[in-house]
Image (cartoon, rainbow, N blue to C red; front, side, top):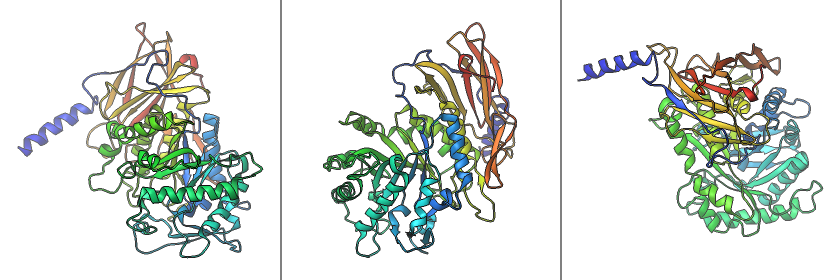
Length: 528
């Protein structure tokens, strides 16, 4: 039987080399924005989270600003008209201790044991005054900062030290400070050894409000930057949605008893280092991506009905919570395609913003900001997912998104982008995994695309790579980016194609496996 099964597999793969499916797939959207579409999308939707122990790598300081990172921020700004948001937070930020007399910007201490040691996360981050200069390397970005509620290292004055840090951050970014967070992933504090095993939601809510009251009174009150001195905190920062640590549990425990909550944050990773994790099944899989995000719909609905309205963000998110030694799925072209689907599904579900966590040694990072591992700084594959998404979002002030997945197979996704309530763009991702080492030719899929506005042609731009496992040779519309002499350098020549639309309002589009395309309707397209 196994010989017969292998023969049928070979026949299936031979047939797949011509077309991914034996039928054309229809992708269509209404001309005017339909019910069930998203609200208007913020143009800083795809933003960043930087952990304290790597913050100086990404930002630098006054004398050595990281211009490579700044160029990447500027690239995304030029595409969307909005500077990326920066959240400084994570497990290591819950281990920050300020020393006013410390000359180095930071001193990272690492344990040889424990769960965070396996993930390359510092067990203590001592910061001096120079560390705060990094907050000025991205001068037009908005910021949130996570105040240390995790560990005071058995030293006295833990709250007072946290207040000092909060004040220094506020003075560094001034009116661009958007919110403070307090603590990181409280449901895991016992696991990482900073709370007892019987730490509860009620304990967390009590502590959280104690810190929020203190920051309001001793940092925010009377500030000269116009910042609200009470409702200025992003709550939750929880890494899951299971009892007894759901967002609804935290609301019911009285997190907003002091009128401090401005927004709420969940932390979400698509998978970890389980034996079953695979690039195709776990990431290049729209059904799995959608299921990972629809779990937040009840939380989104509850927060949106709260008075005042409370935005919900994925304040820390990326592909894999086990951020080391997962190179087969992290930092490769397939993960860039996953990221596009992840971001656009979040837009369609009314998540307010994603803060994509970065780290110098983290496998999923979009770029490595300093020399590391014997290499110079460099761009990594996931950045192309953000660049693609930024161009899809564009500059229009009123962009809404609708997922078009009702009739699509599990390894393909499509989204309609509306500008000013009218259909402007399609984004289609062929998530069928193919590699240059595959034993068959690259399959392709024909799409019958509906163009309902009477246009005679549409513009097509393609995100291409040599295969799902490729970490180089990636191009967006013929362009690529990398590090050269301390800066971000664009290379290649811009390329797009024009696709004719028939009298029936249909255009036939071919998308090879492991590729994403952005289709711009002619009325909103340009030749550049």
